[in-house]
Image 1: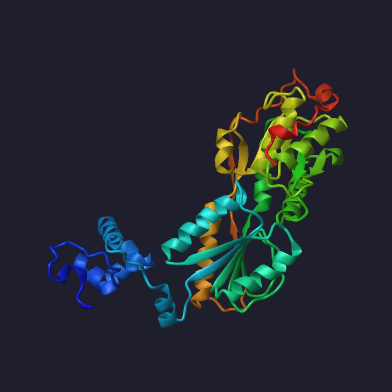
Image 2 (image 1 turned 120 degrees about the vertical axis):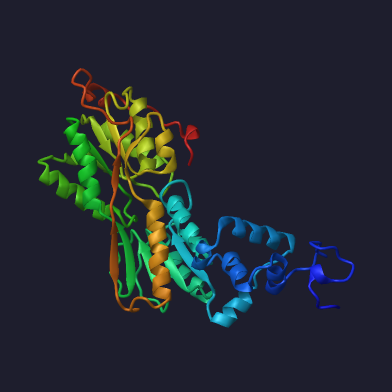
Length: 377
């Protein structure tokens, strides 16, 4: 078979391609560009950012037309890198993990890396096995999201919201004291003193840290936290059901309250439904503050006031620090903590205390029956 490139083969018209899979040299010659330029764009390396968008579009269009696919095996052998990262998350669903993954994926793709995602679902055997399984697949590093990390590996590891103290780790964490100050400060400024705190599940890495921050902030603001108004999410579900159940339990308890500060937006959404089923209005009777600012928070009814975690930025930072460790820019045994700042996003679910409408009577009413078919499990 002739080894001449497609456009130059006898009988072919200029610009015509015979359908065989082109190599990099053929693609570059077809585009009349240097192989290094084409390679930077195809592999989405940082150097590609200096190449005009119109040229990048032309390269990708020609690659599709000429059936060109980069040979990652050859690249890995040549540079002794796999260009593959492992990502470990608790679960994949709407909210915290999916938004973080978006930032991680965007940054990895722009740097020419592929990645595996595994979800441990808080199962101890998976927490033990997944790091080794990823190592067996020759990943160059691991990003662990809201996941306890207990051992040092021979490859770089970055954790997000992990609060881990293992040598050689980079921890990307939120300033939880600032988050508590923003949330409680907002509610206190609106006149709220009887505030429900919905804590996270025991397995969440942020639960204890955030609860400590809330207690610290409440003390500074002379705000008494009634133990009867502190409840914890009790199930592993990542839906709104745990928040709904927690709010139902509070309402059954009969202790009056005028505001709720929920562990995350998903639980806040569940709490709002329980509050409404008790005959109360949000925010006229009860103000609700969530946490995370997931994409759907702004589209709830009412739109949810929340503490925004810069989740995409946290994902991007995780990638930047992991690739920095892979490239040897930081000593392998050196630990670091990178702290990011939260933001209060005020929407329609919070309002000043309304002295004409109190929740005392409503919270003492018998609980409304739970319609399990109308909520996602």
